[in-house]
Amino acid sequence: MRAMTLEDVDAVFAIEQAVQAYPWTRGNFADALNNDYFCRVDEAGGRIRGYAVLMPVVDEAELLNIGVAANQQRMGLGRAMLLEMLDVAREKNIRRIFLEVRASNAAALALYRSAGFVDIGLRRGYYKNAGGGEDAITMACDLTEGIDGQA
Ligand SMILES: CC(C)(COP(=O)(O)OP(=O)(O)OC[C@H]1O[C@@H](n2cnc3c(N)ncnc32)[C@H](O)[C@@H]1OP(=O)(O)O)[C@@H](O)C(=O)NCCC(=O)NCCS
Image (cartoon, rainbow, N blue to C red):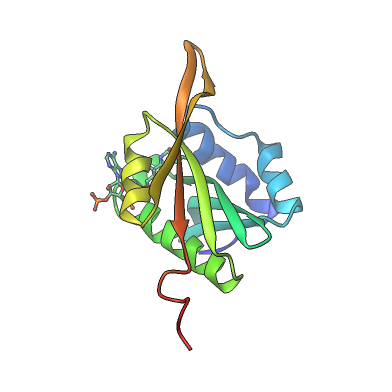
């Protein structure tokens, strides 16, 4: 993975539109870059295959977005990107990462749980869907485990 740049936004947005039910706009990605969020892409053979965006707030962070191109899914890329984002966060002394995920997004839920995220709450009707609201599951990952207490 490498840092995302403004030149990557079109390619990232193309994936986002294809894989997300309620995609971010190009402007959302540009804003994330301009605000110095941790934005990374996975690139192979000159093609972007996936991306992730983490918003740091003092010593905590929120995982705002992660996506893998449809034809690259289920090959371990999402997990590799997520684990790399956790490493990036640790390097920046982030202690805890939060995220919200649609209750219906079984793939993302399984991915996050497999990477050490635990459920910490439920926000009813958090996401606006065509048919009404959809619940969000709030999750957190403690990055200090195994660090605190070490000399
Ligand atoms: C969620 C997403 C990033 C996962 O990326 P991926 O590269 O396909 O995931 P991986 O191959 O690394 O799989 C990691 C784990 O996630 C889970 N998972 C991934 N796809 C799944 C699916 N279709 N159904 C159930 N579990 C799934 C599994 O637990 C998997 O582990 P396993 O293969 O050992 O069983 C990808 O499905 C995606 O881009 N979805 C659309 C965007 C999205 O929903 N993003 C999250 C909210 S912002």
